[in-house]
Image (cartoon, rainbow over all chains, first blue to last red):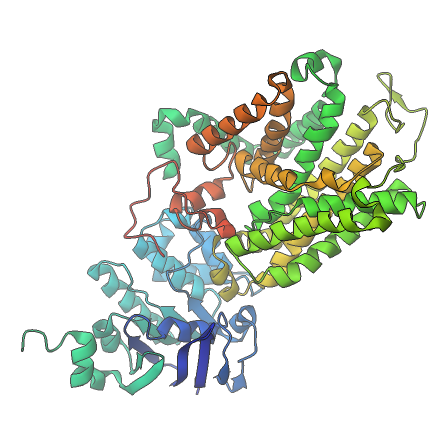
Amino acid sequence: MLLEIKDIHVHYGKIEALKGVSLEVDEGEIVTLIGANGAGKTTTLKTISGLRPLSSGSVVFDGRDISALPGHKRVLVGIGQSPEGRGVFPGMTVTENLLMGAYARKGDFSKDLEEVFELFPRLAERKTQAGGTMSGGEQQMVAIGRALMSKPKVLLLDEPSMGLAPMLVAQIFSIIKEINNRGTTVLLVEQNAQQALQLADRAYVLETGKVVKSAPAADLLDDPQVREAYLGGSLGQH
Amino acid sequence: MSSNSMITNGRNAFGAFVDGVRGRWATAPGWQRWTIYILLIVGALLLPSESIGGFMSPYNDWASILFFPIGTYIVLAIGLNVVVGQAGLLDLGYVAFFAIGGYLMAILGTRMGLNFWEILVVGVLLSAASGVVLGAPTLRLRGDYLAIVTLGFGEIVRQTAENTDAIGGPRGIAGIPHPPDIDGIELFGVQIFHYGVLDPRPYYYLLVALAVLIIVFVKRWERSRVGRAWAAIREDEDAAEVMGVPTFKFKLLAFAIGAAIGGAMGVVWAAKTISINPNDFLFMLSATIVAAVVLGGSGNVPGVILGAFLVAWLPERFRGLSDYRILVFGAALVVLMIFRPEGLLPSRRRKAELAEGTGGMGALGAEVPGPEDQPAGEGVAK
């Protein structure tokens, strides 16, 4: 198992945001975490990347307990993240943003840059544009590309479809598939359950800080409860 | 691109001009840059000349004004710019480090008999240490909370000085020694290394030397890995952390460097002033230096220098208006913030940050839209 979260509890002050979440991501998979607003999806990702301390439970990566490892060191073990709201550095150019992704590594990054530019030709056209002046879709590309620059074993994506037009969402999702085909494991947090489930191998459904369902993604697409709650499946049948 | 819309915008002709100069500067060959640097330093050394003093400061001795407040504010603003402009941490208690430097000079000079140069070294180190001591517990806070805590720290330092009889209490410390003289070196009739009571110019030259040294260091940091880390922290701290930037360590470093610069200035200032007391280190000074940084163009050293110069010089220049000068000064600040919220000479990067409309001021947390139109994004993040 590449990434394993065991019964984590996370608090914001006195409020318990995660009430014992467990999930596993195997090497080469795309796993998606779906759920409504406030279910704890982002908190789960932040806990994995080390931005939130956990009250109990553990995060195990590549056989090693990283629960106490500070966030900036988790990049080194192989966790790359495109944070919530994209988190593009607005004052840096596209290239500078991408190079920030390789901040923790040493050496020559020109090959890695090329790879990202090949994956996102749009970014190659805008190398010197400031991140803050780009459109939402382009910023999302920067955020994903930047995370790839750290050469992660697992890529954590927090709502890459947020605020994007449907065409762009499809484009971003096909790039995620491509990234996965090239050998990077993906943990995808999404509100856009329909598309996330079509893309992913397996899925977890999060509800108010608890995993309420976990199954192969294709099964959840047909699951009546999930359809009802997240896919608008029963609309029009009443 | 923002610079295009700016050129078409008549109001921002000044900005376009600055952009042009900056573009040329970015591509200027090394020898041209060095020439300009040397001219600037020579210019700074020639500043305390009587010929411009009559206009620049009709009410006070121009050379004295150049040392304090102008030069002092400039050095403090450069130091605070590391914290506010580079790392994006709003420090409202910066005067504390100036006070610590000043008191170190006063105590070590009068009680331990150390000379100025020794105290300068000790002062820099201890001020940096005080920056770490303040930073370690408080830098876990962000934005407004950090500002409040630093504001408190500034007051704690002053109150402690006021209530500690061993360091003079409210009367402060008098009889602070001047830097040791090196007599006999004369330039244009000024004994440039004779640190007496009457002639402020040697102190001013000392301050220029200190400022040049600090600027060199600060610019080198800015262009290094450290500078990139600060920029990332300022623009999005969480993103910086997940990129592998040890954010806490770098924030602490920014605090320590800022504190060291403030402390160094405190030492130099106290060495000229002979006597200091807690009321020299009021919150007003912290606020003024923050104003200088923001007004000049947070994050950009030339901008910050210009801001500090204006903030220090304008009230002196218009001293004839007595109390109304503060009114005029306040009005000038408001007007500037309306028409150039990014500061007089902002860094390019800062401009782009402001254009995004959210994280523009870094952890300053102010959500001010830029003067230009918002980028046509599909809903800016957050």
